[in-house]
Length: 432
Ligand code: ATP
Ligand code: MG
Image (cartoon, rainbow, N blue to C red):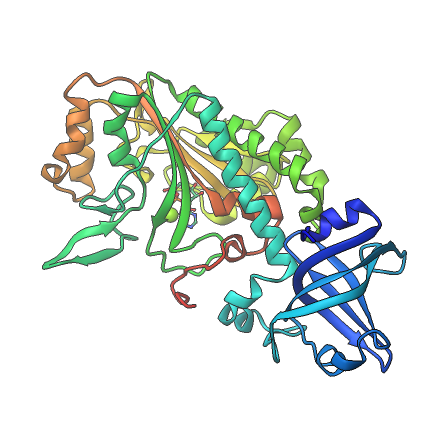
């Protein structure tokens, strides 16, 4: 008999079924054993009657949490069962034993992190991983539909994109401190827009973040796009459309998972329905002063506290634009009307989830780029390959990077970004 998923069995509603899965919960008496079986779809209660299994009762009686099983039995509706159905088992086979599964109720975050490989089986992590899968799929789908090509940059890079402080240097054979793990695809993506014009990727980025925040990983998945012949507004519009598309797919497909996470869906709906708020950095400072009594000196980057106060005023992301030139990366385009600011934007998510996207129109003036590289203590010679993009048929272009785990953290309403990725990497944690 063909095995089906527990969800398909429930949809079938009655009759004989063959299932396989893992023991999620077990309890029993002298006469009956109740096993709640779980698979990737859901859970179902299975009942073993001793009268039927006198010879193997010892094995059944000793079945423990997370043992894997195949069962055949008769499905029927039962209001008292956890998912409204139960299976009266007729035959079974233990596939993999499990003894003293280490994870029991109410264990510390640290213990669960040490046992992450086992904790992935929890209903909470399963729900998050399913949403994560939808998010990745929706990002690919969005860019393909918009006519972008998928393109890959190298992970070993000989230049720095986002500044030196959080670079991971790797020993590259005899070479020390010359090769770094990618912080962003960008410098190797820009050369490709002259061939493909519209490109995107989803790839890991690495940043040696020394701070313990709820938003920073040392390895995260970065969805990035780069676009030729565009202006600064186009970049912002693509970012807004991308986020809306991902939300649409998650709300279509993952309501049960959001329910497991006890996520208040009414907090997500405005993102689909309303236009994102757009304001300049200078205007954001005014709002912070007027509505949150926070004084920020013009020229200082917005800190977490300021971003949180600002976004608390809205139920959709704030696209904050035109930051001071000196707080932003060397490749961001100087604003033609005001040389003190750049055409760069951060998308700041509501509910305190912070920056989700960083993007910009790219500077195409060769001399300005060189000057800003020097100002950052960089030798433009190392960037020759990149500077060639401005020498041969340069065009207006721009792009953005979205932190996929930041987006998942916000969608799922997680306290920490660590739960948005299967095996989080931070300063202290690189195992298991
Ligand atoms: P932050 O100010 O929060 O450190 P950033 O300005 O360094 O962010 P960008 O360089 O613009 O970020 O990177 C693009 C996007 O990548 C960010 O908007 C964010 O969503 C994500 N991101 C950046 N650093 C991390 C990190 N350490 N862990 C997870 N996501 C990150
Ligand atoms: Mg950073």
